[in-house]
Length: 157
Image (spheres, rainbow, N blue to C red):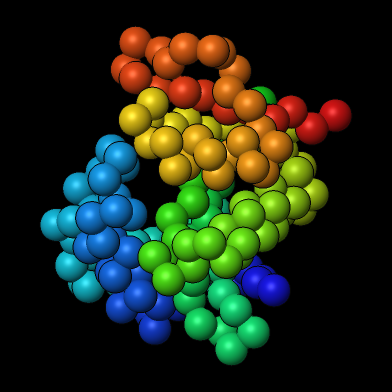
């Protein structure tokens, strides 16, 4: 079972491990492979502000960092945010990614009072698309957009 907590400096080393794992970052649209431990520490420090995004560490019972889940670019007027998840490679196949996703969605719709949470996936990222389908989410369109992205959206009523 996982829980969410604020990111801490001691998470930086395991965070850097997923950033430097080619399978983890292959379809991400950010230069994670070139990140350093200092970059991770800067991100962790900035995440403490919780604005305009909320970033949380998904951790196990021993408080070991498993990955980061985020609600980015929170729009208070429209009550929308973009979901993101990046998990350590040793969590693959364990079910904790789904738990982490559900936990951050609950945070968004519950504590933060969001109305809509959305995210996109590169069309070439078959693993992520299978993951979201397994979680019960479908894309908003049958074909990717002009940037090769599939979009997902959840509206809370």
